[in-house]
Image (cartoon, rainbow, N blue to C red; front, side, top):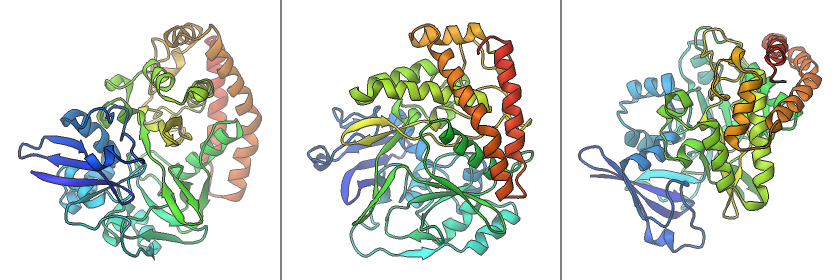
Length: 418
């Protein structure tokens, strides 16, 4: 039997266990259940139940980890064979408010903390060599790598000029994304920056982000699950929609058995604070519309989350907004079915009507949200694309995405969705 302690600041939340047959479980600590600061790790792990079995435990903790090529590389170079091993080594700065550490390690929040500069020469060298930058960070400070998702990224403290890594479980403030090295995927940092800023321009809630120039341009985004006050940096708990529904990352896409738009819509209605239901479901509809328009086929259920504020769930700012449709080699179908279709060229009036019926919203509600977002995108996209390309001469993709949006909007009109 092996154990990992789960902390919120210096308070023990509970223990994750792996038995001799590699079956996982999690148990809330009695002291946590009696604490004034207590909160459930996820909606699938309510505090009315103390112990959770393998499926639910895995669904929460596995969703904290890197995926795909980044994880495979770290597993091969670091000798990691399981989710448990990964969390044991790299669980000190997870998404949300928790810290995961082994029994014999430090108690987070106790003792002095410091920050050390990231060796950016090594980071840039790794990018040039088409190697994961996560490996560089893992060597610098084991513990600061548990960032979910498939993209190569790492958490830092960033003051606008210097990238720093904290120690002893102190929280980070930003996430740095390196250019995607996959064949056929170019200018990913400019793509994401443009799409995030376009989302901001049309009224979607997104975290602050920037491009940092150097031998390779990096995309830097402010962590929305952190806040800073006079006493320092603090964590805010979050859960993505897979964690909230007890689903592992392997099922994040609807066509892989993951949540549908209806299930996610109902999750929002059932879970957010009562005075935020209307604004949250409207934001969700706008998120769907925006992703359809820009061609973000990777807008799966891990790419939408809840934040916990004052004991109540609210929809987190939107993140990972990227036009994947601009890359012919990537997944061509939308992450969710719109009605009975997920092929964009076949999404029209019937599919919009089916979606509205599925969500049990008034007729033409989504169509109006789609039309409104479309108008705002048209008004903002060209100027923003030219601005990004003017300030970064090597950037070409914002103009290409702007043209792709024109094509996609024409398709929606021809099919009667607009």
